[in-house]
Every structure is written in structure tokens, then in C-alpha cells.
Image (cartoon, rainbow, N blue to C red; front, side, top):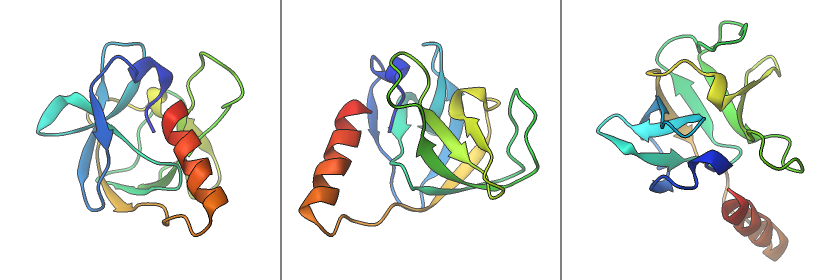
Amino acid sequence: MCDYSLMQVLSRPAKNGEKLITRNFGTGTRGFSSPDDPKIAVCVLPGTELAFEQSIQANVPTPAHCTAIFRQVNKDIRYVHHDALELPNGRIVLLTDLVEGQLAVVLQLPAEPKTTEETERQKRVALLG
């Protein structure tokens, strides 16, 4: 979804096939937006698969990969960044560590919930953002 420091920014959910760009929203974190609407954060559900136009670049050492799966980490710790990308080699990179201006496309959104428990879990994830 969208990290806690994007709570004050207008946001909307990501769509399958949508192009996104990494953006610094001036709130202490980076996230995704549409290249056409930089003021609205595009929130991504955990499990969403993304393909970047070029190798993913971050402000921390990162292996060369163009695909990643969106994850949320350290959810039990308040006031830390939770939004992250899992690279094909299993390495986790915080979204806020990504270099601004990278283009990506949403390859696949996570599967629709099949049970009441899965539905409730996704609702909680959406509320906690």
C-alpha cells in the first residue's frame, strides 16, 4: 500500500498494466505515482509484480534486476518505512531507498482473496497502509 509517511498525500490503488514512476513526495519517503499525475501517490498491494524499464537503482548497493515483487516489511514496528521491493534473488530494498524517476509497469496485481480470512487480511493491510 502506501507507507505511513504518505498518509497526508492523496492516493489511489494501482491498476494492472499501469505505468508508474518512483517519486519523492517531500514527506520523508519515496513512493510511486503516475507519470502523468505526480501529486497523487499510487498505492501498491503486497504481492504486486513490477517490471522496471531499466535495472532497479537505489541509494544502497542493489544487484542488477529489472523485476520485483512489492512487499511490506517490519509492520510490527511503528514509524519506520514498510514499503519494499523483493528482488528475484530474495534481497529486500526499501521503496524509499529507490532513486527517483525510475519507470515501472504493474505486471500483475495479487490474486483476489478466496476465503473470508484472506478478505479480512487484505482489508487490514489496506487500512494500515
